[in-house]
Amino acid sequence: MVQAMAIGASFALHKIESTKGDFQTVGSAIDYFQSRRRHLVALLYTLADAATGSQTVAQLDTLRAG
Image (cartoon, rainbow, N blue to C red; front, top):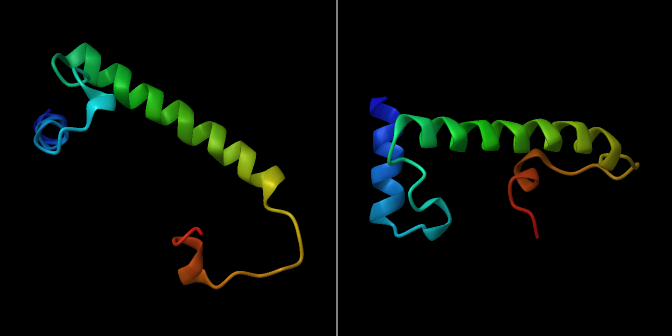
């Protein structure tokens, strides 16, 4: 709960509009975390199909897309 409150306060402090109201109640925080979980699971399954090829990428460059 403390971490969820801290995340909500940080989003509000930085004026991140896409999460406006997501941390007003416990239920809205649960909905937010559930949506992020679904997104990450979908990404996990997508990467297996997208990560094909013979060119290797340095580990540091995997975090710096572009």
